[in-house]
Image (cartoon, rainbow, N blue to C red; front, side):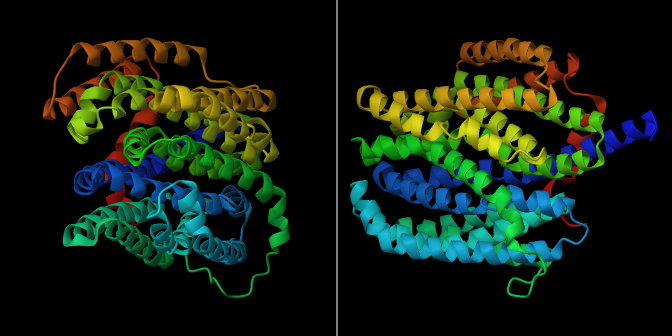
Length: 492
């Protein structure tokens, strides 16, 4: 293959990945407006105590759901991406997901009251039992979305997420408004998951109960390390909240911490949208043996992750105004926690990117080996720090250990491929981060002008990246293509 053909292949792979990532990110980004509307509505309708209980319920069940989804998540994307006939693999994966999720529902029903007693929240038990119904529905829906990514149907994947977030917001607001309180919010989540499952089944018709020629045993070499890594990272994401409550925190404090986590979710949302697409695209590139394409995909991914730091700095700089606008003065303690958590969220993006690279490279055990100790180490630190420093101590431990995990996984990628984030990108990110932080701090405002300030600061960050060459013309075309078609272009 000529150099021109290599360049064309590299450009096509990167453009397809970026276009798909932007579509999926825009779809998942509907969580931001819908989530903010839902959060504002629930914090004001339920109050800190009930909202704190709701946050604990959702955190526990979401951890279970995402842990299950990651059992075969990266593995199924990789195997389906490599396969010429993917339907037998899909059927096997769907069967396994259904069995595991059914077992999880039974376990949660059995131990819900014990969990409530452990967290000293008596009402938690009944809410957990209700929320458990969402587990098999959500898991099957996510499994279908993973299949769509594996076969390269990124637009369809984006459309399903947009429907889920919009329906979830509408249903929660309606059901809570008619007096169902926390139960109404939980039922709204369950119904929105069911709606998404119905839609995604129209795209992926692989039989769930039919016979499959693909043997499940072929998956286990990847399943065990990837599941342990994903479950550990999901637990790490929620462990600070759970231990803030378990180590003497009140339900009100849990509500304040949940609010901070909800605002710090955007970088993690990007990772959720981007890394599965990177895994699918990079798996195909490694299969072709095109080193230039591989290098370009990994370098681009590292650049994108590093360039999220200025947006984190901007968020930290206007955290007090943002929290006051969204939640009101009652949640004033959220701002300081958000200012710390947002940087930890950026670190988890780097971990996720490196996880995708190492998995596509045939090294599924390395992410677990490098980032696996983060959970037991964090537990130790939380027990030492939270009783003395409270919520700010918990958020500081989370951020510090997230960056330790990011550095460890970056080292593994460099060992395998001799690729690292460009030094000039890192330097530019630090410069613009400082400028963004102090710019939003100097402009003291409130109300709707906080939104105006964030838009202007974000525009300034993007402009700086364009002027300095961090965004190429092709990447900008992919960006605006994805933004123009958005989730509305989810159907071919």
